[in-house]
Structures are given as C-alpha cells and as structure tokens.
Image 1 (cartoon, rainbow, N blue to C red):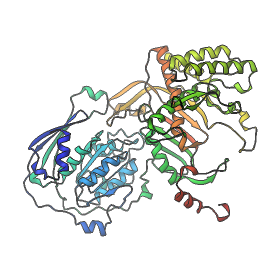
Image 2: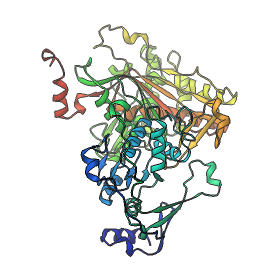
Image 3: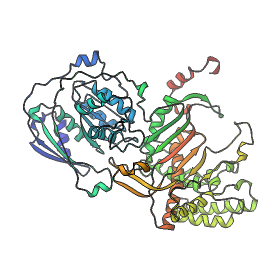
Image 4: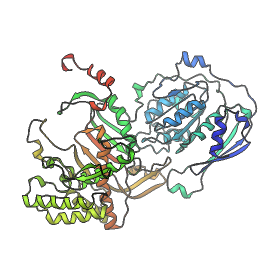
Length: 595
C-alpha cells in the first residue's frame, strides 16, 4: 500500500478492520510495517469523561494544547510545534496535542498525563525543539532519572532535570505511557493511521514495526534497531488520577527555561524557530517603554538566543525585512546580499534594482559613514583617516560593486578584495581579516581554547553627543569567533544537525562522541529589534563562513559550526510590529499622564 492509497482509504471513512492483514508504507525513505495481531477481547475500562472534565478540569495545564476527546488513549506531541500535524491529530482522535519546547514543558506534560489514566500512548513527531525535549521524553521512558532527577541518557543541552516532580509522579508517567518516537516524521497520513489504530478494539490490534532513525553519524554505520509497538485501546489500569498542583506560572512551560525582564536564555534549533519564539517571549517578558526615537517598545534586558544550527532553517517564512521583499525567494536573496555587502565590505549598503528585481549593492550617503557596519568591521577608522585613503577605499568599493552588481561575491573574490584594500589602508584597519588570520593560527598551532580574537564596532567618539537621542552608535557591537577543540556530540534525528560541547568530567560516561574542532561564535548587540534578528544573524553568518573558508584554505581543515550565541543587551518589539488591540492594552498599563 502506498501513501496515496492509504490517504484515500483513511479519507473514505472506512472501518480500519477493512485494512489488509499486512501492509507497509515508505515515508521519507523509512519503511513502516503493519501486521494485524488480534488480542484477546477484554473489558474496556475508562476513567469517566465527565469526572475528567468537571472535577479535574483536564488538562490541568492547558498551555497551547488543542483538546479532543479526553477519554481517548493517545496524545500527539510535536516538540517544536507543527500546526498541520496537530490539526490532523485532532481530526484523527487524539485526546490532546501540542508543542513541548522545554524541560519545564516536559514536567507540565507529565502532570497532565498522570492526571488522566486514559492516556496510554504518546506519539512524538515533527521536529525536536532546541532543548531536545523529544529526546528527553524518550530517554525518560527508557532509562528513568538518577538520584538528582536528571534524565539518564538524554542529549538535552540545557537542563535535563525534572526537579519539581516526585519519584512517584515520574514512575507513574513511565508505567502509564508507551512512547512512539517518530521525531523527524512529518507525514500527516502516517500519523493519522497510527492514531486511529491506537483507538481500535483489541481484536483489531496491529503490530507496527520500523527501524530507529539514527541520531548520530556514528550510529548510521551500526545495524539499525527495530522498534515494535502493538497498537490498540488498552483502557486504563484501574488507577486513580494523580493530580499535582502545578501551573504554567510555577513551571514556566515556555521556549526558555524561565522568562524574565532581565537575563533570559532562549534555545532554538534554527533561526526560523528563534524568530518565532522571540515574539512570544517579548509579549510575556517585555516592559512597555519609550526609546530615544520616541517609539514605544516591549523591552527585555540581557537576552541570549542560542541557535543550534546555522546551516538550515535560516529563512523565516513570510519574513519581509524591507519594503521590496514580497516573496520568500526575494527574502532569501536579500538576506544573503545583506550579510555580505553590509558586513564584509566597507562603505556598502543594499538597495532594490527594479529592472533586475533583486537586491543589489550601493554606496550610501556620506553622512551614514560612521554607522556603516562593513566600514567599522573592515575599514575601522575610515571616517577619520586622510582624504586620499578615504577616496581610495571608495573607488575600490565602487569598482568591486560594479563587478558583482548582479551576483554575490564568493570567498575568493572577497579575499582578493581585502588584499587590494590592504594596499590602500594606512590609518583604517580591517578587523575581520585580522581575526581571520588569527583563527588560522589558532587551528595550525592547536590552541584548543582561545578567547582573545574579536572584532568591535564601537568607538569612544560614539558617546560624544552626550544626549542619547543624538548618539548614532551601531546596534551590532562585537563578534567573537570562539573555536574549541574538545569532545562534542552530534545529534540529528529530525533533519536538523546539532553539535554540543560535552563537559570534560562527563566524557567517560558518554559514547558516540567526537574529538575535534568546533566553531562556536558569539555576537553582542547593544540593542536589538526583534524584526531585525534574522538580518543580524546573517551578518554573523557571513563573517563566520568567511573565517571558516579561510581556515580550510590555510590548513585543509573543514571545521563545522556548533551553537551560535546571540546576545542582546536590550531586545525589543517595537510598536509598529504590534496589532492595534495589543497596543491599546499596553498603553492602558501606563499612568494616565504618560499616554
């Protein structure tokens, strides 16, 4: 049976007893086998639906769950949110479905599950979250927790603990549930079939068999492990609900461990996921204040965004950073051009060419020279150097822009440009080229924990106006290209590769580790509008890729990206990004004389 035939069968409303006794389907290159395995008829015991709804008010912590029939035995969790899968799951008959982004969210999932003894299956599907909560749940069921309530065997990089739950609650969850791990599966037809099979009577039980998807490259060379589940409605185990008095406020079921107006770390698998999460974070944690520009904004202080992969998910859907971007294709071309021209080339900006219908380079007005990122990165001091040097740099930039007007220059072309630039520079200085050469030395000389190379965009003269409304210092302050040669873990179960450093004292307890170089850069911004987040990350990406390509040229080593840290001293969501109703609600929070 192929997916099309299965989709038609499920859509026809036919009883699942009409399915073949054996069939298999292929999804994303993986084979899923189904074999009818009738079980002995048994009395189906259910905890009463009305008690769950009226007395327990299940689920206790509704969060962002969609709720179906609370008597049904199966839940679907998509750790990083997948609206399409979740909508199909409700239609197929789950009791509840939703995301589970953090370890705190896992604690809330556990409290919800053990307070409804009808729930016997938990399907994990879609993409794992930045905290790898899917992996955490799977290992919790398989291995349990240690004496510190740390989940044994999980690769969760942030906080793999369940400190708010008793051993009784954890053991009930493990005993009650069977986890069907389909992380990395995005096909709604397959998920719908599995959900519906979980609702069948014992006489129509099916055995589901599939191969475990390897989470690391190391495991890909091993014999794949076969996973087997027997699917039918088991009913409850005649246990009363275990009701715990935890709430969203107590446990912070958010894409970050605990949100705060000051000092929050947000974990995200990709730039696209981070951009989505930050809106939620700022609406929850932001304070409504007036900026130097006289605009109002929701503001949070000292926020760190850890992006685990800067090779995939770089382009948020429907992101329109400037007025001429009206499609995802134009957005991708804009971000690539912006990252190169605005960060790697002095005295450059990007504009829209209506004839070419694409983003192209340009020379900005001279009055913006002091604010130019590319100038401060690759020709720092240009605004105060001698006229001859300044004019020479501008001529070189114009010539380079003309040559690459219709296409983005590659690494070799930019490196040659830098060599020509060096011949002109006397007072100005190319910081990026300096730290790029330093990074090659780090790798050649095996300096495994360096921390000195960095580039900085700010200068003391930025503060001379005194009045903060007249200061024109760049938002992007500093870029630090951290390299580490140590043990790290590579994880990929959902199509997104993540690489995490492993604490040295934990190395002996771990397996599947690599010992080699990893690139773990950090960017620091004095202020950061949520809207500009993807563009700023693409600036860091352009600088990071230039450094990595030069190392490969100099040493022959192709060093992979690890996690990227993006620090915002002030992260804000400005009033023009908010809808009218929210604006009115925020303005009502101010004293009447401050509106």
